[in-house]
Image (cartoon, rainbow, N blue to C red):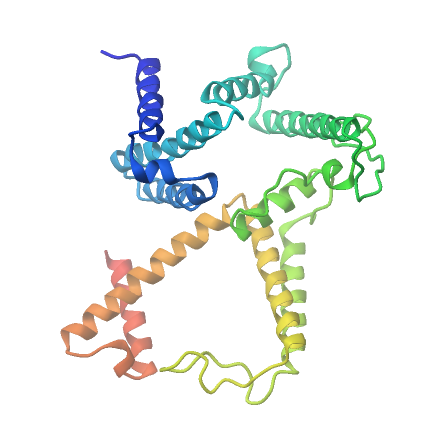
Length: 322
């Protein structure tokens, strides 16, 4: 029986062989950039398996996600940047350093205390990383475009003079992640400084405020007002609006989404997961409607909106009964 370590080493060796001369032509052609879409795809497939409670599928999807890690590490080793050993060493060090209540003398009896310690340690790490970058740039004779300033970190340490973007508590939150997840992380991080709504009621007031602002902008929308694309060619028959109004409407809708994300955060809900579940619910109900229409020799685009609405209500009732 192979050990876990032996199994891992075998996977690393297989990846190396695929990338080696005489290996797989497709694997050898890949770069960091070409693999990125697969990483995102595999991540979502992991989430879907968890939502479906399909544990057998989850084991396979986690293997696919691990493959992405092995792929990046092998490519990095080929160019002399780092190896899978470096990845594992940094992971182990991070886990130990961020759990001083387990591997050290710190005390944390509740998950809330653990989270506070974790965030404080991450903030210290960001400061150290920014200082290392500043020193490296100084050694190379480089200067920053930004004026450095000193701010107080959330862990009550004196921050070195470093560029604002590195000194920010928001540093390290990737703008490449899904926008809803980014909004959740940005607002959660900002809340650590006290910049937050005191309760969920304040958020509902903000939601009403943002809704009113959107409705105010819509007063400039050409008559007869916003309408969904009609059946047929998308956007056909829709009134043209100015680029300025389009930008303002986009901003107001974005503000609405941001408030909704914060409502989810105050309720300790994952907004991405909540929306995925609603998406699946919509898919399930709409496909039920399609099946009923198909059985009668029809299709959604061939019946009235009133009939579609009636079928939609039937689909909801069917779910309640099942």
